[in-house]
Length: 204
Image: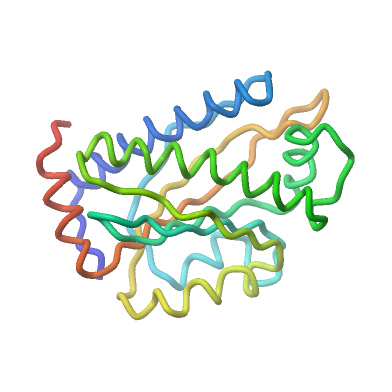
């Protein structure tokens, strides 16, 4: 079980707010257009809630996963509605490509790499832990098929995960929309105390 108290969640929220702010800035510069994210909500939730929060097992999603490695080890899942993939890919490539094609997957992986990379970099800076991230994996499928294979081995760690939830803008021409994304931080059991110790050393 992820035993994180309210004060520690507040500190994770602050890390997340800074990290996702840096990610939004990086995307804005890359795309030469505004990218805004809301202040994230952070809570502990159960594995059983992940697919439900993604819209149910048959809802199509993009799922980007990576490993946090080094002094703190964890898995991060980044999930958002697949309906927004095409506009993200178009903005990154300038081409009318479907996300299932090679160039689309590469662009989506880079999109995930920018966002999760900014988060991991901020996490390392603020906690003063030597942490790096792996190359993200990308899956576009129904939520049950996209998420379950990643969750099965992780469920051995316990029943709970840390949910970081934010809204940010799509890049549909002439009618930008906001969409919700979920980030799940799943520490390995021997890293949970590392996280708690690092958080205790942070001022609010």
